[in-house]
Length: 297
Length: 307
Image (tube, rainbow over all chains, first blue to last red; front, side):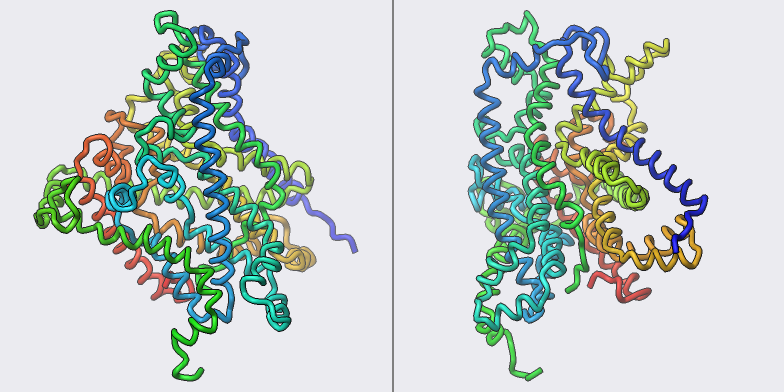
C-alpha cells in the first residue's frame, strides 16, 4: 500500500527547502565577499567599498604577497608541520584511549572517563597554564608550544569512545581474543579499520584546530619565524609594521602605497584555501563519524 | 564479584589496555591537573623569576584589587549571559535546521547544502574578524557602502557597544551552528525508519512526526551537548570575542568577558595579580555553578545528572 502524502508534507518540504537555501546563501556570502575583494584593485576598494563582484578586477594583492613569498611560505611551513604532527600524534593517542575506555571488561573505564571529563569542569586558569608551558615545560619559542596545547580534548576522546563502541561489535573483539590476539593487535588490526569514519571526522577537527590556531603563537612564540599562518595573518591585519616590511621586501616604498586592503583579502584566501581542499575528502564520513553516545559508560 | 579483586589484579590482567591509556592520562595530568596547583599564584605577589612557592604570600590582596576594579560583576554577567544565549539559540537553530535538512528528499541537494552550512566552521576566527571588518568598517564596509548608495548617513558600528551584542551572537551562530547541526543530523540518521513508517500509517503528518518522534529521539544528544557546554559556562568563546572586538576599549562594556579580561591582563597590561585572581574566580565560580545545577538536575531526574 502506498501511503499518500498529505498537504502538510508538501508544505513542510517547501519550508525545508526555502530555509535551507536561505541558510546556505547566508553561509556562503561572506566567503564571496572576501574572494571578490581579493581580486579587486585597492583603489576600487577604497573608492567604492567592498562588493560581491570585483568592480575593477586586479591581481595586485596576490602579486605583492608572492613577489617575496619567503615569509608566507615560512608561516605555511610552520602551520603544516604542526598540523600534520599534531593530528597524527593526537589521533593515535585519542583512538587508543577511546578504544580502551569503551572496553566493557576494563574495570575502571568510568573512573578514567571522568578523570578526563573533569578537566572541562575545573582548571587552574590561563596564568598557571602559561607558567606551566613557559617556565616548567620550557616550550616557549619551540614547535612543542604549538603542538602540545591542542593535542587532545575530552570531547574528542568521548566522541571517539562512542564511535568505536557503536562501530565495533563486542563479538568481533571477543572472537579475536579467543583466537589469541593481544589487546593492542586487536586495536590495530580490527578496531582501526572499522573506525575509519570516526578517524576521518576527529582527524579533521584536530587538523582544523591546528590549522586555525593563532592563540598558541600569541601566547608562547616571540620568534616571528615560528609564527603560525593565522597569527601571521593576524599581524598583517592589525599591525602596519608587518605591511611595511612586506612592502619593503617587494620593493614598494610606503609612500607609493602598498595595496593594503586587497592584500589583506588575498592573504585571507591564501590562508584558508588548503584546509577547505581537505573537506571534500573527509566529508562523506562526516555524518557517520559524529554519532555521540553517552558520557557515562 | 570477589572481594579481593582490586586495582593491582586489574592492572596486571589488563596491562596492555592500561599502557594504551597511559599517554592520554599522563597528558591530562600534566596539562590540566598540574596547573591546578598554580591556583596558588593568585595568593602571592607575582614575580616572574621566583619559583612559585618562594614568592611572598599576600593572602587575598589580589582578589581585593580585582573586586575594587569594579569589573567583576560586569564580566560575570557578560560571560554567563552570552553563554546562555549561545546554548539556547545555538541548539534551537541547529535542531531545527537538522530536522529540515533531514526532511529534504533530493540527495544531491541535501549533500550540497549540508556542506555549505558547515563551511563557516572551517573559517578561522582571524578570518572571521576580517569578514566582520569587511562588512562593518566605517570607511568602506559593505554596510556603509549600501547606506551611502541609498542616500543614508554611514554608521560607525565600531563605536556602538549595544550593537555588538547582536553581532557577536549572530556571528557565533553563523560560525558554529553547522557543527552541532551535523551532530544532530547524525543522530536523526540513526533513528529507525520503522518509527516513521508506523507513524505514517497511524496518520501522523510530517509536523507531527518531527515533533513526536524526531525531537524526543534527539534528547540524548542534546543532553550530552548541554553537559559539555555547561562545563564551560564561565569560559567564553575567547577566540570569537577577542578577534571580533580586539583591544577596542569602546566596546568592553558589552563585549568583555572573563577570558578576554584575563588574557589582556596577562599579555597586554601585564597585571599578573589581576589575571591570576580573575582566573581562579572564573574556575571556582564556574565549578560551583555546575555543582549546583548538577545537584538540581539530580533531584529532578537522576538519569540526566552529570555525576
